[in-house]
Image (cartoon, rainbow, N blue to C red; front, side, top):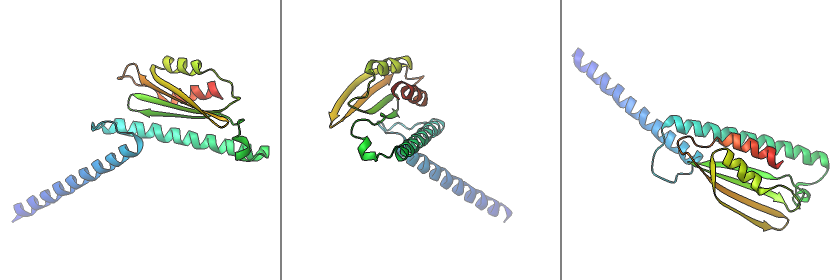
Length: 171
């Protein structure tokens, strides 16, 4: 009798552990779908996924702080956001890491002065090879998109460092 109760409790523990593992797998899968653009069915190890999620959340936090600062600056200047988008806006910069590729999106006004080759040089210094670069002009804004790929896929590209260096270059 003692053996059957211990074996049934062991079965219950095993079932509970299996349920916990399935829930964790589901949570990691949902996290991956929110943080990483899935280009293949290949699963990332959980520590890599958590590292990417942490980096992504830090980048979002930096973007929120930057936007809050810009909002306060607009309030203090007496201009509306619409007035400022006519061409005198500070550049808007977004850097996104997608597996071993890096996408840089930049929006500037027509009269914003910067050198595109400096951005490409910076990406190359960080271990990226520019695959494509394009721009389009809409109204008084110029939209730049630069796609680059890690030269050494094992090392990768440090997205947050690239973002900080680009901000110093563009702003």
